[in-house]
Length: 153
Image (cartoon, rainbow, N blue to C red; front, top):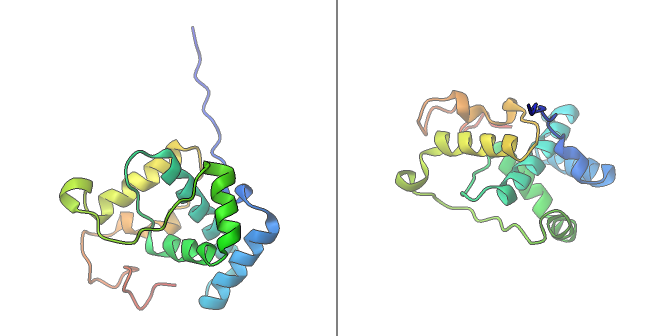
């Protein structure tokens, strides 16, 4: 009889150096002054977990608006981002903003659910505070942390 062992999810923050992580946290806090240090640090982890899931998944994934902001902060450090991608994925992960057809990929909520599932399957921790869209109705104008929300950190 074979016994399956549950693997403890990895904290994706360990994928980069402490120095780079602190730089990204500082960049995000400069852009969003109301963002607490601890939340910014966790956000870096969710962005890194998202990137790892993108490499792992065969389907297109989509970051939450806040995770996307963290990705943008990392992309501004082009050399570090390129080296990270090459080291962990053997290739550069492009940021391709755009619209994914809901008929083909599901709506935003379904796409974010797939993304969160893919992060888990890739072996990384999920922090649901960074994926609030999973709790929202299928809408675009409620200003409850949507991408165009004035309340989005």
